[in-house]
Length: 123
Image 1 (cartoon, helix red, strand yellow):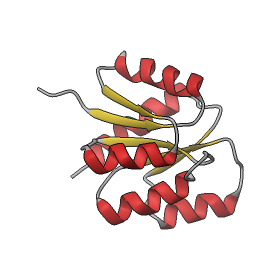
Image 2: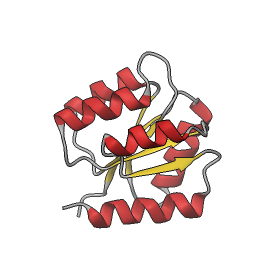
Image 3: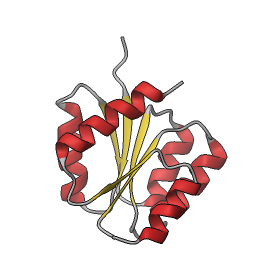
Image 4: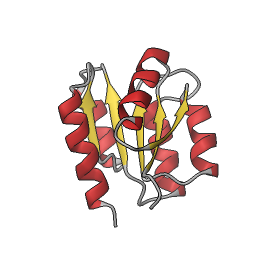
């Protein structure tokens, strides 16, 4: 059986590598992208069970990635990650179809629970 595939898009290298290790330890096939533009290129060419995407990044904001991802693959599960506590951003992400929105610093138990929930909801 194939491992679930996840794309992690975050401009902070330490966050990307930490999340990669976290998910690989849980038997995920992980790909990384350092900004929204790189993430969109990988997303366009690949197939992912789940995408984790930071909000504030160079070249393309996470919200811009989310909008383009929805256009290309409307059923894609996306969890947004951010350190920004801005209600309007959360609202905008939810309107664009963000599956979950997690605040940084990330609580690993919450991340694991939301990941399982997102994958269980995938139809």
